[in-house]
View 1: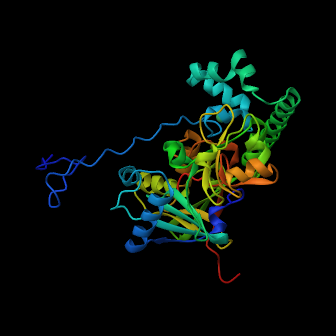
View 2: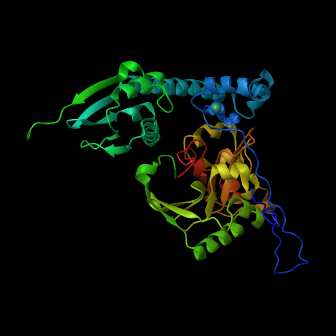
View 3: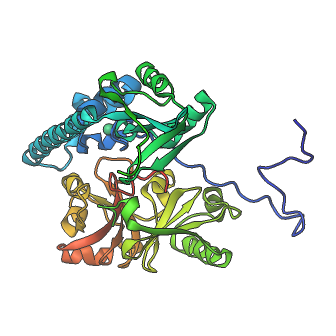
Length: 212
Length: 184
Ligand SMILES: [Zn+2]
């Protein structure tokens, strides 16, 4: 690497103004706040979220000292603070309710995801040329642009994200690569993770003869 | 402000902010927040362009490197995002709500005076009282980090005297849709 002359990036001296001026004061460093990997709150607020059970599991695993700080017997009594016992039990009930609701919602989302289909279509462009369209990957949380990129580097062909006539986004890859894509999805290569093989269907679209 | 906020429907557009206007914003922040110029420089270096993300209902979010740093309602005071406040907790004066109020705050409610004046709450002492219209960090009884950011509706001394109705209007809080936005 070429070395830069006078490389002092942290505190460039105010060269022209006043050579005797004291160096500029250092900025105050930011406080590093730990956030819960489950609910994104600082762990002290997990108890108000909708995923306390999973939050606690995470904290116990990753930061056992903090887990003790927030959830030990003593901590729980001290935490009550000025809150009455009734209000506290109301809060606990609320939390349980919220948690159940969030779980039901996650369940429904998962069911919906598991019911959605990925359609791989082999489309005939002319006698020997085909393109392959892949539709429905986004339902599995896959970034279409990244997937398209993965296809184009894997098959060394053009691959792009386009809108189909129904206005839904899909990936179009040049050439007939439908079988290979099915294999990639089954193997969960790269970004193509989490799609059950049963949810993948391959269809063929022949060139239309005449006007329809 | 951000209880229900969706980037796809609530944003009108992104525009880079003119240098002259950036200077005004920087001066505004330095006069409104208790922040050292060099710290602000570390958060938002002068050579980095500020981007204005225009949102519905006259909300402006300002970002640096796509990361929301501050926001403003109409031409009111500048608020840091809660993430920024967590990093620099001293930049706004602090009030505290009692434990009973946390649940309501996290549902997006404005903070009533009794939740601030009770034993678990906190308002600055008389000689450091805050006038109405001051952005404040909202802390919570027994917690280290701020739970939200709001603006005083009454002076803090008045809150003590009246002790009913809304004392602090909530601007952003833990878990609202601004909190959920890491980048914009
Ligand atoms: Zn959590």
